[in-house]
Length: 202
Image (cartoon, rainbow, N blue to C red; front, side):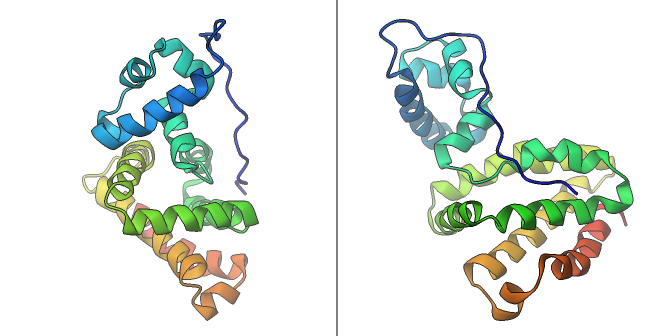
């Protein structure tokens, strides 16, 4: 079973110099502007550093990768992109189950669920947030799943998985449809995982 654990902050090269105590806040503000103007795909660490008036190494020092910085900028409650290598590394016949257990296991945590619902509502109703989140998921999650499949319709298969997972999250945690909201994680995994498995490998 893959359990969700919030990653520890990464320490990288580019230690802050004297007078840069506000660098983290400047970087965060610059990242929000850069992602808003260029989208997830177009935004770069170098561009964010230039906006913040710091060296690129300092951005890496405070936030790690572009995906890490984006997660911090939008207040992401969970990072499925970090768990994906472990999810895909196990037995292929159990990938669908591992995906569902990871997602539902994370969202059953009250803080993850609270922040996740806020983010999902924003993504569904905001013309700025929607393409940003879609760009992040496409590059950091769906494209990696697709590459692991090595079939002509891999991107479609990965997108179908995303649609299944997103639909489950919306129905259970946002709309709170009674039957889904009251069902146990084990019951939902047993019913939904075979569909995800079929999307990926059949």
